[in-house]
Image (cartoon, rainbow, N blue to C red; front, side):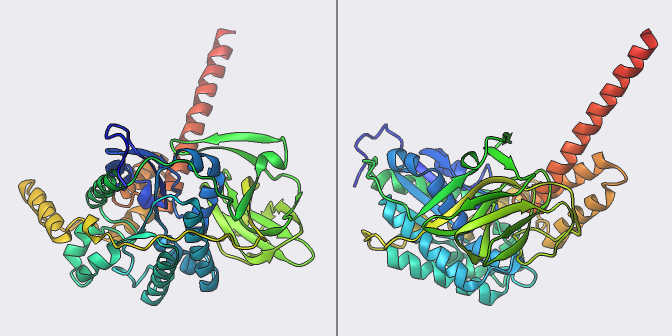
Length: 439
């Protein structure tokens, strides 16, 4: 297939985690050649990608011409950091590619590198198993494959070379991802036609905060804009003909959710980022949701990038609940899988380019190590009660070398809010003193 008009840009949807959000990475490369519709969310597993597909179903049907997706890194990370079972991850991976196949949109699945740094991130066995889940589902549902992890595997034993391409465990360097995005954009422009908007019935649905209460408030930042429901009193919902598999939330600070009915009792802490957290038990029927304020009730399930706290002061801010419908599987039109390894930038050439730039700048040194960035982050955290401005500067420096770091981003957001709040209080105090003086 070829585009009907060479001047008409394709609409390409990006589904993934922080690798799809980094400003000068893959998204910038793709957007040079196409209209980018970015549904990525930091820390996104396959289930979050399903949530995004479901949330924006109508737009995807009518306007999207092709999809680029990645989630193997965060699927592996969810097993380690949140204790999500391998069985559940495998099911979610299969469901994601099935939903993508149902959409009938040409789809490129990226497998990004994770096995390069296994000692303190995710075990090699877990990373390999998750990789196999993806490869099996990609083959079953006929996605096109760009296997970046395999292409870079020869560099796993070369510490300096590897860090030129993958400066932290989860994120290849921006310039490498930018080139990859350019190559993907060119390939899709040459091979994909504008979509005819063929409708399909998704296997999931979302119960939105708007459907549960009128007591909503709006939250937004540079990436997201959502209505949220602060759960200050218990609320109830029914899963209908399906099971509740996850909650999308965006609280103001870390919080603790209690979900219960006659069959399950889940206690789960959620971080302050806009995120989707999956339930590891079967949640069906009439269900109660409430926020726990005060001493923790003791978590029964973990959450990604969340360290449990002993005392909680903020309510859960609900965005939506993801329901997996009990429906017979719809037949899927499956394309033959194609491996598109020619789209991956040559790592050796890229390394030489980086070396030349560093040499010309008289900076032929290895990039920051994982421990270096951790030291910056931890030093900033220790400084936050002494000098918040300097803590923010240090944390922002850490973010330069780990732009997808969830804890780092959360800390920066918290510091900025505190500083703004302090500035507002000082301003009010000055105004009050002036008023008293004028009297």
